[in-house]
Image (cartoon, rainbow, N blue to C red; front, side, top):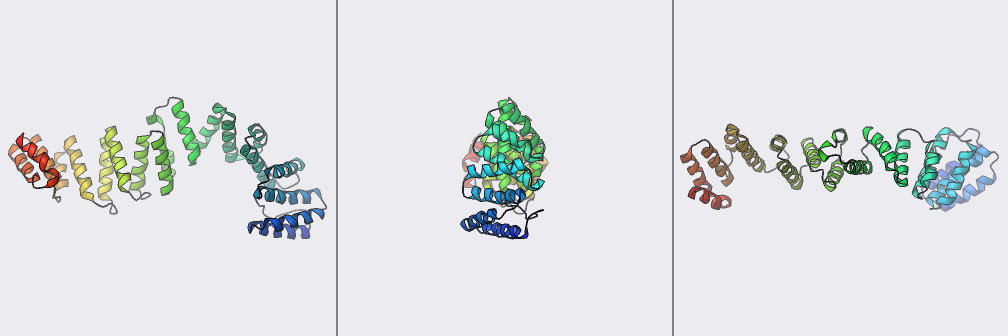
Length: 327
């Protein structure tokens, strides 16, 4: 909380000393900065100069861990109201934070009225949460969420609130959040939150979007999570979309695995032509097991037997194919 040096009725000497103090604080030379502030305070001629020096001194106290003395000086600055509005706003924010850190939420509430805009809303949310007034806390939290917040803490609390209200997980709307993310760490954090609160479909949706749009590289675990979740929900539409995405992305290896999965899906949905098309350039036991099932569904039993026989040549499908031949 170090101010820009744009002082009105401040002497050049004090201005110069405060600039020196600012540089010392930036270099973490706190003891030297403290000595200079004490000397320059003795030379202060006006209340405005004393307030500005005290503002620096309060910053120094905070860095030294002395929040009590810092609070006294900051309150004194607010009472006199001589410094410019920019600095006073910063002081008000710092006083609110100090009271919140000490869990003095009623005191924080008295000062937060002066803090403007979105930061005011965030502070009120935290204060009412600290006071245990969940109705008011949720009111301000909803404003933050509707305003496009990507804050992890806010979203976790928002999900907890909605679940406590009995809102079904499927009704929790995270679409605006999804479109606002742009870093892998954000996707990873939010998918962890969704996992924690059993919002599994939301997790799959975010992983799918992240992989498809290059925000996530598409690790084996990420891909398996999406596939398993879509299958558990019986969401064949998104399962098809995701498998086609994996097949189309050049950076995703082992595409045959996903072609096999997609062929199984098309077999289930009756898109038989797509099954054969997908399996054309694959040579595996699973391919011939799928073709065997396809020919059985088409009433082509001789062709089915041929396919199951071919599948016996592959160790991974030998047992299953022999059983199909015996049946």
